[in-house]
Amino acid sequence: AVVRYGDDIELQHLKSGKMLSIQRHTIAGTEKENMSDAEAIHDVLVSDSESENQWFTVEPRFSIQHLSDPLRYGECLSLVASALPDQFLQADRECFEDPAFAGDGFSQHAVHTFRDVFAWKMGVYTPYKAEASVSIEGGEVVRLLHKEEGLEGLYVATGDADGDDDGNDSGDVYLDVEECGSYSFWRVELENERSGATAEYGMVARLRHLLTQKYLCYSKRGVKLCAERNAMTLLVLEPVFVTGGHMKYNCCCHFQLKSIGHFLHATSTLLPPPPGLGRVKMLGTSPMLHREDGFAVIQVEEAQVEMIGRAVQIRASLTRFLTVLKMPDASVKLRQTVYNFDFILGVLKGAAGMCSEDDDTWQNMMRKAQVLALVTEITVEMNHKLVTGSAMISSSEMLAVLQLYDAAHAVLQRAMHRNASNGSYLSKYMAQMQVQLLEPACCKSAGSTILSMLQDNLSVVRELPAEEKSFFIQHVNDTQDQKAQYLRFVASLCCCSGKGIFENQDLAIMQWFKAHREMFVRTQTSDKGGVEVTLPAVRGMGTNKTLDLNLMTDVSSAYYPMLDYYEACLELFAAVCAGQCAEGRNLVG
Image 1 (tube, rainbow, N blue to C red):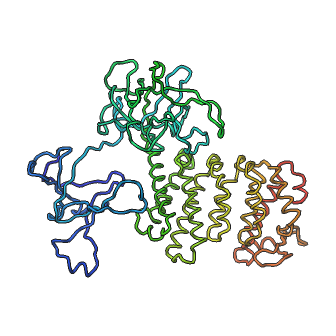
Image 2 (image 1 turned 60 degrees about the horizontal axis):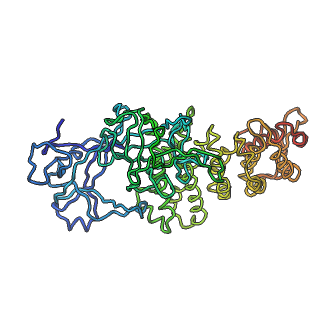
Image 3 (image 1 turned 180 degrees about the vertical axis):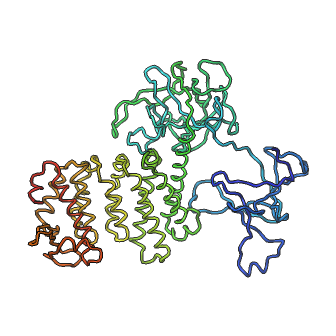
């Protein structure tokens, strides 16, 4: 259908699916008395409820257009609230300062309605559809498969040349097998063309890395990534087997750097330590056109693109929030930005909810998009806020901080569920997590995260530094409520997937079983043939307190809180006895 001037339309926000709507602006009593009806303004928001407040009439801005003329791209128009014919949709001329965007170099403007005429320009937006055509179109996401002999199956990738699979490195562009495609997705942006235009050989384009949102560019250091959309990012799409026409998927092309005239060319280089991964194929340039340096453009499934896009959006939101959180007057700034506690709480819950029991794709994506690193940083900042400013935090803000802190740890725990790679990656933050154990308000969530990190993850258990292992041994008596938690930490270190870890078992035997045997619950047979337990000095119940085991399992009993500690002791006993640890078995016996 053709939209014409004079038509009533609705405007839908694509990301949320909600409709643009107006509502009367709420103002103070004194200001309201001094404002006439003609000067009234209305706020503009998105809403999922249907009403006439969502209708806007398209009117020509200048007299060269008339009512009933078709609306064309590039023309100026005015949008009038259909329910209030004197209210025009307009943007404030003064910038809106959101602290989360400080220093980004672009401005934000509040949108509302007022009686003054305001001009808008209609532009083209075409959503990405992977199945739209056999030809490559501007805005689509592709993978570039190198076709040189001996390099078959290698894709142009970036974001993880250092091999730790966390999406964070120096931005080198290299060739990799990259089966999952997370680091080898590129969006084709055609120069001087709208999104959705068909790509043709000879056109100038840019390649934007989907995960990092940076452009492939040429610099003095070679082919790298850069955030700026400058002349050094322009590439000419040159044909290999044809002379021109539309670019088809799976056909080959050369990429020529428009700035210097060189062609993208695979080079072999030795990465310096660290990481010292040996010789890899990097993407460089050559002034000569090598026929074998062709790249096949491979189509990408839309579901994969959407998942990466979701991870990038979450990363951006968390980055904005941390920017505000680290400001000296963060409490004030958080009330001025949309990236506040409530917003980020929704973001974190959404990230945790996307984790699947059967598929770890999203869990891995959060690591590669640096979401897990940012979430961990949020826990550190929240812990610092609770430790240093708890006396100055209001009760409502304290509740918001604790909710956000627990939600952040829930994301980390879901990310590590049945995913040893994420556990190994997050283990580098073990020292920061252990600090959080010392804050009473944080210890429960932090402890659950540490357990998720240690349990059934052999690489973490073996490679954990000695000082971080000793932390669990040394702090067991800090608070009575956390003793069971610390016993489970050491149990996870002593046994992994049913396999005893001798060096950690020896540490527990020397530091606990020989030096502090009094802290364990002892079990023995009673004179009546039942089972008795002797409780240590926990929760102020005294030492050598012997009672029937059934009494401790009774929910109404005063000793019921000791049941969790008793179970933690049994878990540690089993872990120390695992494998061929004869000394552990003798001490437990």
